[in-house]
Image (cartoon, rainbow, N blue to C red; front, top):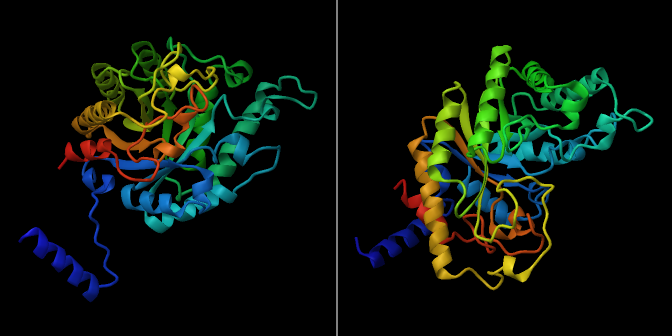
Length: 371
């Protein structure tokens, strides 16, 4: 059939079957449907229906969703006894209407948790028993509300330091090292059927990989079940080395857990003097030399980004027997957090769709690895 004949045929179909939608653009969820789920993180703005074009793209391309910020403690549980379910309820409605796999992010974290959680009525550190009670109430209240509706939960987020040691968070200071045991135990009790995840960045680094392995093995020895390890994919053009990425995927799978690639984006911008990853307390002052592509991404860099994304997805596909989900941290370049982290006000190109919600060459490169 010639190109002209094909176009006429599609035109006639559109007349005869006006309700039929013909997709010219391939989708990530279909391309990788036999390997893993492919998802995106959504802002509250988009969850609440204030960007219809972006949501149309999400429904076309993805089969799993994660909320960027609106299920974190400071948003959902800002004051004692006060819960805000508005955005989360709408998030669940969207997912259920589209038959999507839903992820909740995140229950226990050292950031974006209000001070009152860790304090008594006088502003002093609260006691272990009180903090455990608050942890249990928070987990039970939220997970019980969405039991059977949200399939996966980031139970504990970023508990391991870059050197592999346990982060000295207020959770650890007040409760002790066993706060992770309680968090996963409470979550299992609240929804026995949910997938429970430990989520962290820089897990392709050797020391942090070893620390995470040690932590999960310890939980397993206590009879505490962790279902998956979330490897945050806040990457750049050189980090991680693919060999180290594969080593981590293989090592985590040997624990008998699934691997999920979470928060995936690839920055093309120069990295300041800061370890790679997503430590949100690391911020640097803006300098023009750290923002070289404000007027657009040069073709050669666009191609480098395409190959970088393709190489990552080749690894994911090669290990699809171990990986159950790959989630991008955002939908398009314009709304990516990488424009403001670790330097506010830059212009980054970290995702597969541009600022006009159009697929980039990197999108085509990812699609082509699995024709």
